Amino acid sequence: METLKFKNGDTMPAIGLGTWKSGKGKVEEAVKIALNNGYRHIDCASTYGNEAEIGRAFKDIFAQGKIKREDVWVTSKLWNDSHKKEHVIPALKKTLDDLQLDYLDLYLMHWPVAFKHGVGFPSNDDDYLSLEEVPIIETWNAMIEAKKQGLVKHIGVSNFSSKKLDDLMSQTTETPEMNQVELHPFLPQPELIQFCRENNIHNTAYSPLGSGDRSAQMKAEDEPSLLEEPAIVEIAEKHNVSPAQVLIKWAVSRGTAVIPKSTTGKHIISNLESINVKLDEEDLKKIAGIERHFRYVTGEFFVTPGNSYNNIYDL
Image 1 (cartoon, rainbow, N blue to C red):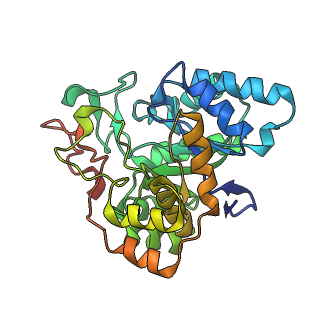
Image 2 (spheres, rainbow, N blue to C red):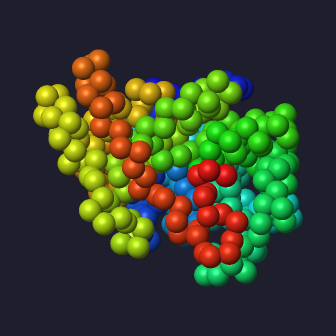
Image 3 (cartoon, helix red, strand yellow):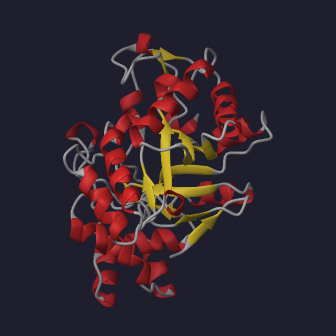
């Protein structure tokens, strides 16, 4: 298994199990299947609403003794309503309680967007806090404090543009160690990856298979399918593997981590087996030719008429 190495020598497995949209009643078993079949990286977030169930899976698995806590990389994320400095560590402790863990391997600021405390998702302009009211650096400094307290080993961000990363780095000596963003052949974001590489920031690719199971409100009309893209299907047939395996191995081949989500046992196992796929230069060149600058997670759900986040990825 390829890994990403951090400054202190810690390593994160390149392929993890994503848990966004993994419903209650399914995610506990999915995590158990993943861990029992070789996964050592689980990606979580408080806003997914399923961390308590994931915590039950961790408790059961670790109690069996075959897999130790220190063998599993666990990531979670700070939701947008807890960006004020007094809310960061309590939100983190709630996640730790739900996951039944003493520490996280990685904690990410989920979005460079702030809500009023207690707002799960905004319904109007009044539900937001501007970046003047709660600057990113305020939130970041509280995450640094969480690291100092031993609650997390590494800290980073998610959905940050290079401009937003550059602005944050100009205000701190503690550079984010990770930027988790949407990455796939329709949206490879090479400039962002290069910026991160030059600044020793790792990347994790979310929605690597296109997140076809997200809600209808989040979907565009006639949006393209990664799994049905002719070039991807052709490469999959060439290697006698699935399109999903091609997409996952493509992400790993770029030096990023990748977190495909599934609650189906055979897909969970198959996704991890993509590590054995061998993509050649011809394959990579063909994949590079299908870039569309198409984003599945547009951020438009943060747009209300008067708030300051109308161009989330340009901030």
